[in-house]
Length: 187
Image (cartoon, rainbow, N blue to C red; front, side, top):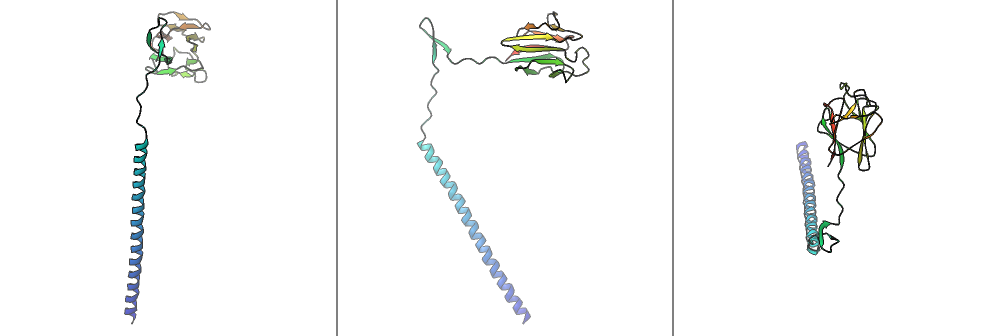
């Protein structure tokens, strides 16, 4: 008697397991159908939007500036962007680097507390606060900050302490000797 009850119990478990499995498979199939239908509706909506969207128009030519002689000029009315000025390191620790100018001056030196372009402490020819360069409108002013070994233009002209000297774009200057050299560059 005990064995037949056990067989009936296992038979009922098998039936319940089959029912639960059938429900799970049915819900999985239903979810897959819903997902596929949602993808189909989205693709159809995108196709309908593309069909109603107007074709792209070619860009219109820019208006031309009138020449005082009455002839059309080829120069566009759109203003050309101003060139961006940078301090470029030509030789030394920052060789190949471009440091952009902003509202604050660039102070070059070895002391991290006094300079914002800090050179390594083993450069003995460069002072803690060696020199300062700033952009004033379209001009660039270079000033020695009382350095021990001096600031020089590439021509060898010394920059006096406390007397700003105008430096043109493309002109180079060095600190102490020509192993640490910079130039103003326009990009």
